Length: 276
Image (cartoon, rainbow, N blue to C red; front, top):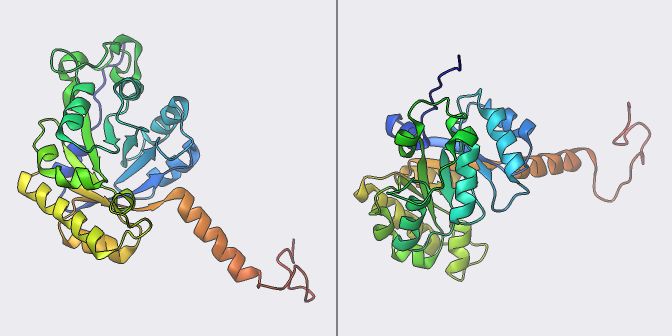
């Protein structure tokens, strides 16, 4: 007799149930091992990135399996808001989508249709073949599927900020997430995520979400910036990334043990490999 299964709460469910903002980190390495380490860190959520990372369907599946035993909630970002790609992600068992570059209410509504079965949407029906329903071990999956999926759309352009109230008004958009890096570039301020105009645009979106009674999140690696946006009412934040943490920590090791202009072993016993 097959096991009857219940899927975990969505990211939207967790946001609604939490009495504090949810704090997460990017997982960009494509590594199930690193995803599992991050999932056990005590952070609330992880963003498994398919836009700027070397992730395939297979590696995303492996990471979902690796983090499933931990309390951290995984969100997955496709490379673009494409109906076919989203169908594949959903069938893998992705419950929480973060769709990049949503600039209009029309695009947001298209993404809602992509995560719903007909007649409310256009998602292909393949649940018997898919991990999403645990191969039909989740009772009444087809009828309840929309309740097992959370949709967050990214606001990361001037056009998206201009239309943020309309995007928030789309039924089925559970939350928005502001990307200051791409937003700054769209504003002609490439690399200036902390420019006052960018900060003002981010905070405008946070206020719009509060007015619409929907959560807003933001990417903010600098602690002071994250604190500012949390103080402004952000409901969730990303405060680091696996690859960035490894890069900075390895650089710190080099800075600590290798002095500029001095090669290994210039002084007896003081080379970086002394003691090996």
